[in-house]
Image (cartoon, rainbow, N blue to C red; front, side):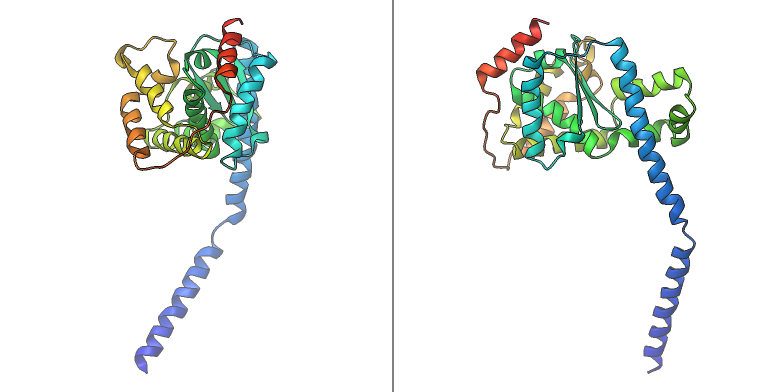
Amino acid sequence: MLKSLFQFAIIVALFFLIWFGFSKVNWYKIFRIEKVTKSTEEKLGNLYWDIISKSEEEVKTLAILKPIDSLVSKLCASNDIDEKKLKIHIVNKDVINAFALPNNHLVIYTGLISSCENEGELLGVLGHEISHIQKNHIMKKLVKETGLALLISITTQGGDGGAVQETLRMLTSSAYDRKLETEADMTSVDYLINAKVNPEHFANFLYRLSSGEENIPKQLYWISTHPESKVRAEEIVHYIKKKKFETKQILGSDSWNNLKIKIKDL
């Protein structure tokens, strides 16, 4: 009897202790921070894209935009991703690169499209970047490396021009930490499988461009900012080894080859 009363007293005490602890949490402040972060993310994304759009040539050719849209649409529809939230920008630049910006901006250089041998290779890279967007890796990286206060300052007070350029450089020319990169790789593989795209193409892309990785030319920006490509390719191959998947082309060979021709003619 005494034992039961003692146990009951402990339970009651724990209940009030937990209740007291939660009562001291400033929930308004927590949710306010989330609201501020979201607002900051939207402003940052628009600010960064505005800077890029003023210095780079955005592709407006429908013969290029439509097939890319078809590929992204298939990837999104197969993985419950809201495509309407994505802001896709194709930039005419002979550099192998693609990167995600805050507020769902995805920038794709024509050099990346040209370097891909098939739609699966391109979708592997795009899936990787879309994964960064879906999992909020972009803001995690910025907040971790610069601090939320600086990001808020950039968007609310005009910020320092140097700070804007430096934070943008972090997203376009430096890798995420290894854990986030691995997560983005494997999520991209899952995206591909769900979209019936052969994920081996993504691994092949990494293998092919990783040759001579220690002396990577500047044109191979996506590889230079995503190091250890050969190791990542091996991890992808190991990950899909026991998975069963169907494959089906989205564009077809003629449409894919025509896209490459249109890119070359820019």
